[in-house]
Length: 278
Image 1: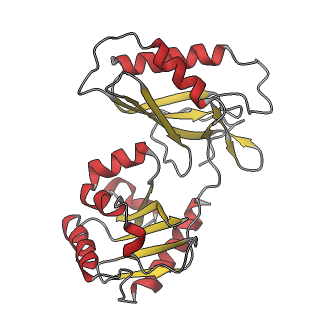
Image 2 (image 1 turned 180 degrees about the horizontal axis):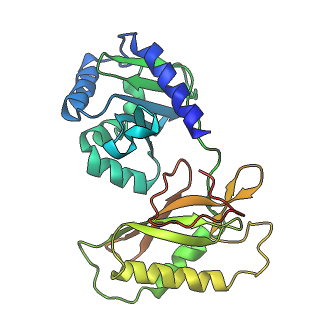
């Protein structure tokens, strides 16, 4: 599924790259785009997808790392969900100039967009930019997602359980990737940012175990837990990235994203009876 999507994206980019146009009303924004490409030589092209006039997805097209070059693919596609704090964190860390550009509050007013409320994208290349009157959807179908009916209950318990008086200045963020079971339970995981010795990590796992213990043992339909499972012709094993931040007032911010996640769990053990769906 994702391979076909990548091929389609590459084919569309080849066609659209031949058009040296501008998606922006002011030439100064085009110069900012070229500054981004001059700063990050590894980026081949960019697509910014707008939903409801808000920049929501960012597709970064790069050459593959050497260890993946023998797969037959020519490009590496990284998808950033701009409303997910975890992806915002990685984007700032790797491409801060690009992050500042797509995070402008008045970004929509800088673009020659097709109309109010339309879904569209802008293609950015070294040759120029172009508005495309169609948007990309998720490459892999609906992913696992935080249950909006249980999220605030979990955060309240997380705040309640955090008894450490000192707020760690350099250790206030934790990012973890989990595999989710078919009923939404968090299973195998990898810490992507942070470490196991931190009070954030210990409090999160302790609180999740406590929160999970209050749920009914019968979990189908899978609507009662903290996470709703990936859906693809029924409930599937999927991935979800959690972003946990300890705020200066000692309260927690929690967000998560399960769409278009790359597997980053080391030594992941796939169950042939319930395989991971990406």
